[in-house]
Amino acid sequence: MPTDSKMAKFLQSYGYDLILGAIAAIYVLMAPYTKVEESFNVQSMHDILYHRHRLDSYDHLEFPGVVPRTFIGAFIISFFASPLVFIISFLGFPKIYSLVAARFVLGCIILSTLRFFRIQIRKKFGYQVESFFLLLTTLQFHLLFYSTRPLPNILALGLVNLAYGNWLKGNFYSALNFLIFATVIFRCDVILLLGPIALEFFLTKSISFWKTLKYCVGTAVVTAGSCGHGIFLSTGLTIFVDSIMWKKFVWPEFEVFWFNSILNRSSDWVAKPDTFHSLVLHLSTPTVFACSLSSIPVISFVLLYSKLPHKELRFIISSVPMLNLSAAVAASRMYEFYQIYKNRKKTIWKLANMVMLALFAISAGCTVFTFMASYNNYPSGYDLKRLHQISHPANVKGEEWVHIDTFSAMNGISRFCESAFPWRYSKEEEMVVEELQNRNFTYLVNEHPSVDGYKCLFSEEGFDRVELRQGFPPIVLVKRAKVYVHQDMKADDQLHKKWPGC
Image (cartoon, rainbow, N blue to C red; front, side, top):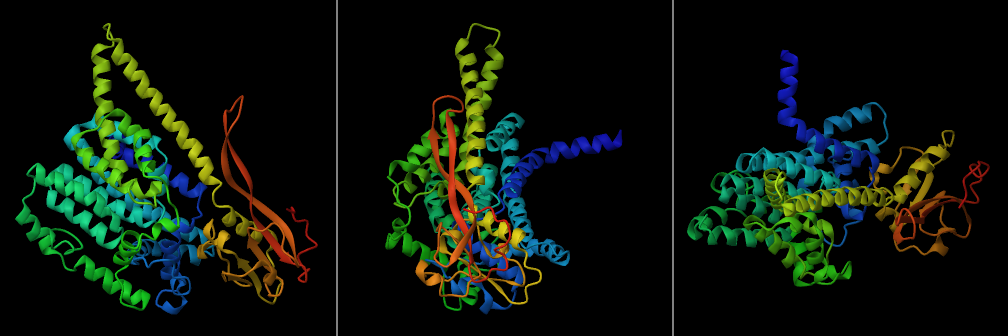
């Protein structure tokens, strides 16, 4: 039947994308809130979508953060999300739906670039390798979970995926262009990936030194397409856009580079031993399988990053697609050998196949476990939502002020979580607990179980630690109360309600 034929062709072309998109969408819907790492782009998207040209109302001017970041990614996401946000606002839905819409848009962008990379895998290695690549990506948690989170690393990941795809196509200069653009605009540390890849291109004579200078010094050169035919310099673009938004001359990623690499101030935030990323690399499923020539620059990127004091898993997420490709090639070959020797007395291939299946099962189990921990990692977002639902002061004539402390602002609350009148919000920092009772805040959302002059209405638990126990299950996630909601004792209009308590 024609309809069935069209459906079959559609699923053949986009079935894998639907699988990845469905998983990413589940992650968004189950964990819609964001943390401090995403704060700049989240607040920027909110302000672009809701404040538009009213720059003085933008969050970054009041809370600039440690170093400036570029607005280019937030502008791109907001542009595509704006029709959805218009519909959401027209229907009167809470703003949190706009955040979900923006995250869906980002996920579509990132998964589209991953599709480009996957198609090049199919063309070069065949359908079987592509299928194993999909399986590995599906069974791993972080790539799809982070693909909808507006981190600079994820914005850079989209360009890195395009670079990987062009690498497989043999468009080596285009691959370098995408990496340079990612470095200049979104993440200066992509240079640690750019360097080893460029070196491999030179060593394999895929590119020439003088032609690279001709085309790719233009890189800082161009924002799109071939180096020589771009319209804007990537450096000029970020300086132009971000100087307007920050109201001062600024190149954000240069300041990030200066802060992290020259001043070495990033270690003030999170410092881990040199072996941290190396350990992550060795424990990851892809490198258990194989190390191909194409993965050597990516492994070098991880090892180079391990020398920096500030380490987090999201910093090396750009390495995951290429490492998954190496794993997919190895898994495909193991499966082929298993098919050849399964009826013969070649137990080594049967054993290898069983080990591979066991690794897939372990990866799936770790994904479920990690997701449950992440689901409970945004307690203040759920607390504020609960306050809005239970309190709903519809007949209140005055404003209801909510003070949000630093911990709560870092663990789930953004401007997308705010509601309209009579709700008003303050994120005033460096305020001691004793001072709160002298202010006119109606509610407090903070990390303190008790505050003088306020009654604790309820609390929200969050992920605390992993605990090993005897019996089943041997590993459990332990939660504890992380965020508390208090009401001013003088504002007794809501105290008569049956609050859960703390």
